[in-house]
Length: 176
Image 1 (cartoon, rainbow, N blue to C red):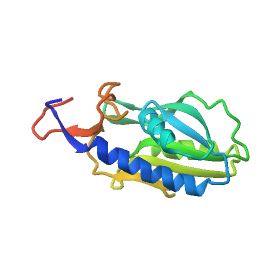
Image 2 (image 1 turned 30 degrees about the vertical axis):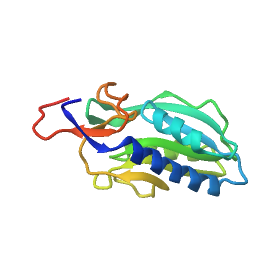
Image 3 (image 1 turned 90 degrees about the vertical axis):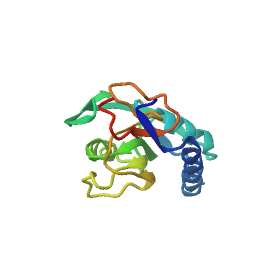
Image 4 (image 1 turned 60 degrees about the horizontal axis):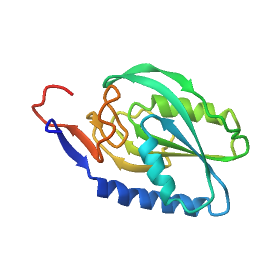
């Protein structure tokens, strides 16, 4: 941990998740949305978010790959698709981070093909300086700078997901 410095504390994350859950509870008070987490990165965020949600809901997961180390590969590979039928359903996509926008664009287009009743995009983190999107992310936990971050589900080559907050590499540290 000595190579890293805390960017967003566990307490700030927990507080923001409660706010997001409240907003989603209000939006879906008369519906039963299905939350779709993007694996592996969103699993902690999704688990904590769903524990705060009070409306009836369902969940599913999709697994994609678009990164190698700290760099985007430029393409998205589908590794595991959802198992639920989302046609006519209220769908909430739960993402850990939107940086280039490649993954969220892929997911949005893929889910829209199934003709859901609504599609809500939720991301814990957004890098607005990097995201090249022609559509909004409906709910963003935190906007951050373009630097690479780990922790709370986010990884570097599958490591550091277990950190309880969001961390960045300390200035002067050579590499992960």
